[in-house]
Length: 425
Image (cartoon, rainbow, N blue to C red; front, top):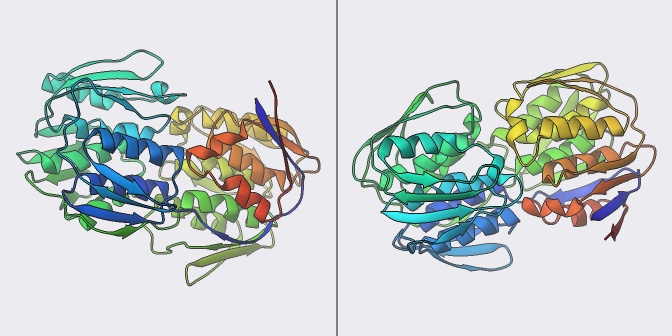
């Protein structure tokens, strides 16, 4: 087991925010569905992005990558019969590509690691059953075998499980022969992620009719057009440093697109409601705060930033309520349970409910030993909490940050964070 010890001290300085993993996934997939070559720049090759590149290669696409760029040329959209697609721990990779691999008759197996096999896939199972596509999976782990071919038509999808199922169908259906409709049967959560998919597809020449997020109409026989794209900065990663600044640290963030459609840009509104003053100009953002106060936060549209927002709430004056947060239980770990238990170990007062948290603010945190639950967002959130602790914070399994932000600990040190690392066992 690897551990790190973080000494309690402020961090400060300027940081270039890593590129958006969400946008990079989408750009790489759209490029792979194009016939010509696309250049995607400002790419951070996290474990999740590497999983997507590996998957599109199995689909017949070819790629060449440099330090922070990748050239992608689409193939024939047909994998070898019996091919095994390793999605590692990436839910985005899995849910985006499953229908893509069924554009033509295929017999494919998808595998993964960690908690990926515990994350829901029922919306796809229902489609498979309706269309006569054969499938099997192992309960509790990912070994999903699928045999068949997807046909155009009407697809009824719940909107409160994961928007990734909708995005997977949106990527796929324009390439089928007929017109298709996606009908959303419940309230749609994470609309921002659907916006990212639609925006990227439009860049690559695909048109979708969006009827108020209740129905999407997709004409068939469309073609993706190769294009070059520079990935914008990631607001879900920026949230860690924005929260750090709200807690008395002083971090200036560069490479953020303030007109971005990323749903996690909501972090700016949340911290503003909690008392932060946002200063933004020329893709640079900083903030200051005299007194951080509690508020009510709806997690439905921005679940990924909730763990670090909870850190801010733990040190804000008064009570913060985080509602509609049930989907955090089906991420890389049960994030509601993880962030509640670990912050409480550090001296916070967090009460966990079925789909909510209630946080009573405290003046300071103590410190101690905590677990990342091998979840990148839990590990990084606890590192931000360490800047306001009285004693050192020891975090188990810190290497999990490779999933989304491989350079996090290097950047944390560059901002003045003091980290001791060791390996046990």
